[in-house]
Amino acid sequence: MSRRRDGLLTWRFAGRLLVLSSLLISGLAGAEEVGKSWTLDSNSWQLGKDLLPEVVLARVKKGDYTYRVVPIDPERFKQNYSPKFWEASAANAGKYDIDPETCGLKDVQTGKIPDFYFGYPFPKIEPADPHAACKMAWNFTAATQMGNGQGATFTLNGIDSSGEFRRLKLWAELNPYLGRSAGPIPNPDSLRTAVLNNVLEPRDVDGVAGLSRTINDWISQDEVWFYVPATRRVRRVNAATRSDPVAGLDFFADDANCYGGKVEYYQWKLVGEGNILAPVLSPEPLPQEPVSRTRWQVRLPYFKAAYETPGAKGAPWQIVENLTMVPRPVWVIEGHSDDPYYNFGKVIMYMDKDMYRIYWKLVHNKAGEYFYNAMCAYHWSKSADGTFSAVTPNMVIGVNDKTNRAAIAGRYTSQFIETHFDDKHFSLSHLAHMSE
Figure 1 (cartoon, rainbow, N blue to C red):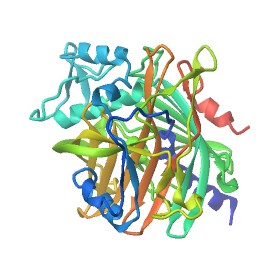
Figure 2: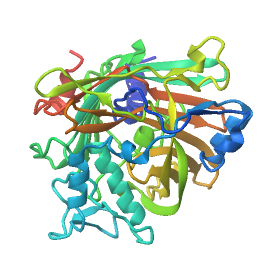
Figure 3: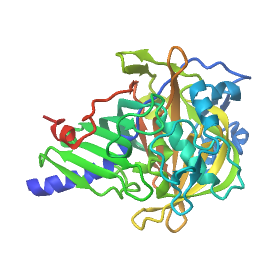
């Protein structure tokens, strides 16, 4: 194969890796149970009615999935977010509104996009509000951003009925500019977030690195660049690939956090409410260990899957160690993109009413046919004095029910939290020199 052809294929592969940029960070601690834990499996699947999406419950009934369910104290669970966050959220009441045409966030006093916020922009949302789902999406974004800068090294594993057929290893680092617990930082390019990633394995894509930046406006697409060692150049790529498979696997860019794009990319609609089993490492927060004046480490147990465990039963991608399910009240939200290049039709998401995390999503094609679901797991971490908290995605399992294949992303064993990256860390010059 010519060098030019090889470089072109690598560029296309690099474009699919944008999703992995956002998949950072996770944890576990001893859970203080409220009530008695129980097992949901093929013998007790009826207990899962109205607690799981129907397509997931069908696999429980079949014997593919077994879940450990731990009842929790809802008020205690809410304290996984710091008092500072809840106080800021309450103080935001009446400060923000929605631009009706774009679903963009705007300051009530100025009518413009806020340069910074902290806490939920909408601490109280009425379900009858025509912009309710859009406001919920902004609360989801604010909860994601509260953790300041973060980073981790993790894997992406493609799995079918025979076990693992492909594995990638990479690191990713993320820096939010809005919603930060640590407060505003210089933001000359008016960004919401910047993400840097680098592929470590396998050898054919070792050194491929990417930089993406989300602009703080209501209309623009993300700016995305990749460095490919085969060409030794930084190249700008099209950001309209959020619904394309990553590296040919059953995993998509918008699977990060169960939704990885700008709020304005979707039309949001509230279609129901209920309860769901939420996947977490633990309902209790993990400790943050100081590493330097600006950095903390969070140590995590590994989500071990059935394909890695001799004698394990069920689907090969089923997690058999360290996954806990907790019952949570959720909003059921439908998202839909008007982008003609977006491959998905409607996407149904189950979003926590208090914590504003998306735990499950069901994806339909443009013809309206369901084909794919994703389970998104999280952990919480807190500083020793309890003044700072972060919620972090630590695993996504994407399952294609048409092909009976899956992909697991995340599952790292440590993360770091950073309050002050170098000013040029998320820059094109740094991207171009990372592989030197």
